Length: 123
Image (cartoon, rainbow, N blue to C red; front, side, top):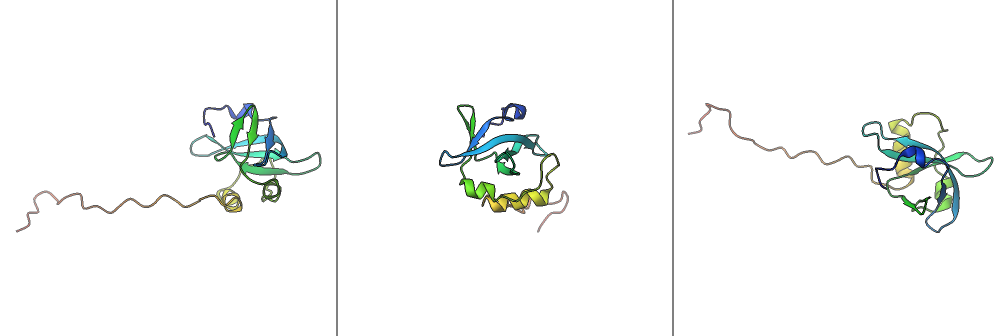
C-alpha cells in the first residue's frame, strides 16, 4: 500500500474483500512502532460486530476504498484484540500467521573475514 497516505484519511472509508464484497468501515489505523508506517486497519464489520484487523501492506486504496486481498470470511475470523489498544508483537505475529503472510526475519548477514589484524603477517 502507498506509504505516503495520511493514516487519518483512511478512517471512515469503506473496505472490500478480494471479491468486491463489502467488509465494513475502517475504524482505526495502527502504525508500525519502528517506522511509523500504517500497518494494520481495524475494520468495523457490522453494527454490533467487533472490529477485524487487516494488514495494509498487501491492500490497496482504490477509488477512495480499501481493497483487501483476502476473503471476507477469513477477515471476519481474524483474531480479535479489541481496538484502541496497542498491538503487541505477539498479537501482530498471530495476525500475520492468520493471513498466511511471511513473518520470517531477514537472513543473518554473512560471516565474512574482513582481513587480518594489522601486524599479524602470515608466513
